[in-house]
Length: 114
Figure 1 (cartoon, one colour):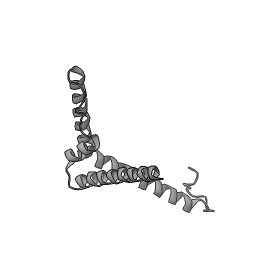
Figure 2 (figure 1 turned 30 degrees about the vertical axis):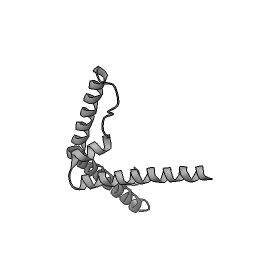
Figure 3 (figure 1 turned 60 degrees about the horizontal axis):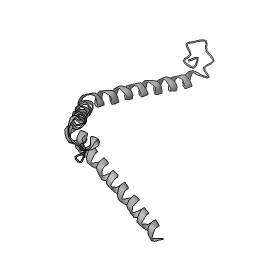
Figure 4 (figure 1 turned 135 degrees about the vertical axis):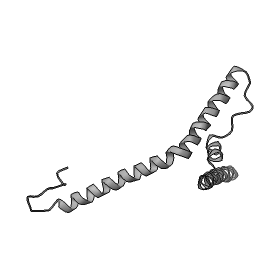
């Protein structure tokens, strides 16, 4: 019974940490602190690993990933979300017009044939 309570407490603490991390990410996005948001998503590079060629490659890959994420958050994310919203609005309008013309008895143009 004590083990179950300890596991539940550990799980709740983990969920709370994830929630706080998510809130901090959205707060950074809202404040247009894209570098801080990207670093929060990527995490820090692992410090305990051996250095040398592999360590330099890992640090370089982490740096490139962070820069790519900053570019996404700063420039592309807004445009992609706006494009997707236009696509959804167009599809919704097409569906509504199709539903409105589905039972039209006239010989006019019908969108429900799509």
